[in-house]
Length: 460
Image (cartoon, rainbow, N blue to C red):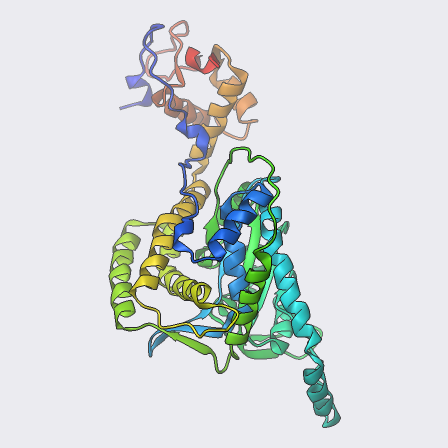
């Protein structure tokens, strides 16, 4: 049946309510951070930072997890079975429009990590002496000061830092103009990033010096990015890197009144970060958090559900779910560390059913809906994007009637053919935005070229 066969002239009362969901980037509401899953004092510190920054907790939680990853990294591993363990390496993307509070929400943790880094550097003298002795013996490797955070995304520069900081480093990219995937266009760059997520071995061969090989190349990432920029990159690149990120995209937020919050908890959080830093060992001899029998059984039940979930997913979502067993194991380890770290550096216990269930709930009830919002938005087809663009134009311009050519020129800027514009209008007819104009009766067998616009679009 031709497309025009189901068109029919409409009376004024024959309009259906327009489906305005097309304007929302296919993005439904996403859940808020489930703070109840986090132990204190971290939970209260997140709430305080949220109020002080006037930004959602969605932008504070990633900084807490990044802080744990920064001081631990490959110096802590979660062991599920003798054949499966995971490093405490986390990649996180904080998504939001400009001026939504991303940077101000991340800043408190960045300041605390700077203190940890300065304390480590102050204790570097012993390492400098040992390095001088090696130089005297003819070993000319440069001295690398203690560092846990960097903004340099070049894999060679990161390898130089990790060479002197074997637990790894946190790549903090706040306001970066490019998405990480753009820095990995060649196979060598992508291989280095994939190794970084697993704290695996890597060999890098910069053009100006001999190649550098590392057995443990651990790099955690905290990155802020605008939604449109992220969508562009997800639409143009492969999914191997994106599948390894935990996404936080809270969307539009209500205005938050200014609040003056005392930073009384900062010192307590700082002391716990110090404790975690002392707890973590070397990349070659890490502190191991083992899953006990109940933890393994609980994880097995979660993985069974993930297997079924992945079979229903496609594209980016399927790739992301494929990495979720690692997400859940790493989150379980992070939650246990958050609960156990204190000024006495109490060693964390085994990872049991409680930690697995909390990590799975955080994945299922928070991170998965946020990732799905990102992927759904990124995977819109060209046709769907044109439909949304024309729908927005109709709502803004509020014409009473339009021609196909007017839509093609004004709404689509001539970036679509007449046939493609026709298909857009057919879809908008189905969605209740337009109907064929009975004043223009084209020849039989041809779709109409003139359309009436739903009067409801002109209402406030």
